[in-house]
Length: 363
Image (spheres, rainbow, N blue to C red):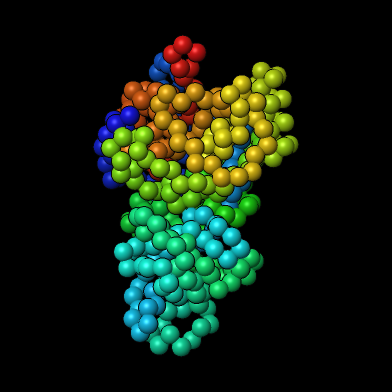
């Protein structure tokens, strides 16, 4: 499909730079498979679901994946920035470098303490560029490995706020908590699974009282989620791989819920993508551990997810393509126009919508 079909105009003032407080006070636009849209709030989510439904959240934890440093090439140094997006080994990360054109295989990059004398190594983290791809993507081999590397990244790294927030304000101490979900447990993401940001202990308790079970999957969200789609046609766009896990216990629970007439409710496009990757054509969820680069566009037949809770996404993004596949392109364009007119807040720290899957023609 033509990528420009997924474009729309969004006023700058609709982009949220802070989450709602409390988190479950964010607005919720309910988008049924047909009929009128309904305005609600996140704390009322249990009323839009049914006893026996199974809610699936992503328990990945965001790491401080943005690293500032200098490139060292002989006597020459220049400032660079790296955003880690996928671990490739105990001592290796795939990353996007800025400015990417300055980087070459064999360069050394020093992150953290980058004093001009380069004499003090305390607080610094060195890496060598061992591979270079397109669009500023590289593979970095670090001086540390395993837990020691994790500790070093935590020491010198910064919270990787999305560009549309970082361009409006700097990172601050609030973001250390604001950009983690209630379910954050397994470190590895470089972007938050933002639909999960709306949850509070009170909301989870209310869901359980309403007979909605809560289950966890893991998808370590990569920085590729922020990359624009530069191709003119969706068929020419390449997705970056992300690592995910669906445990045997979660797969068994979701299959049991569906067999009993319950629906699977995905919290965010990340939960949807890992479950769609783990589910067979006949709708059976299987345990899964590995990479997925699933790219969902209109025409895709969903196997796992019946209802989707998600934030409002960027124009021309793979995520807007995904929700258009779930509910129909015309339907989502109308929903977004409604949300803009009604002053809903967009993107990572913004409001949310609840989508009920449209069955494809002939289903």
